[in-house]
Image (cartoon, rainbow, N blue to C red; front, top):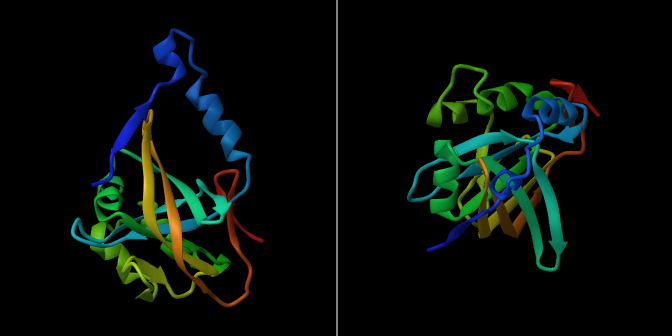
Length: 175
């Protein structure tokens, strides 16, 4: 079983924290690719919309994601120990909204939008994605309100080349 550990934050050390509203406003000005992160296994099928995705290394190929620890998706992802990062195209806004909780769809119902498949791990792969990275979880650390999760990529599916979906200024944009 995978172990997680909390990472101390500056508030624990007596250092005054930064205003979280200012941080969120600053981050809203940073353009980021939009992804749907999915998982499936003994803890069930789940997913969420994410912009906090970044490569870690190319040998072994691995990616890092961040997910709110309070949600059911975080618990399912950690228990299942597999996930798929689906990078969205500009036409995937309805799917992005559904997995972000903006479409009045919950749990399994979110998977009624889009067409889904799987690769090596069994985590759901969105067929319309630009690229899908199928990962096995290798590390999870609780940092304040979020898990920082690293996964080793075990399979990649390249989708059709088309405009990407990015999020900036609290709006979606085509790139």
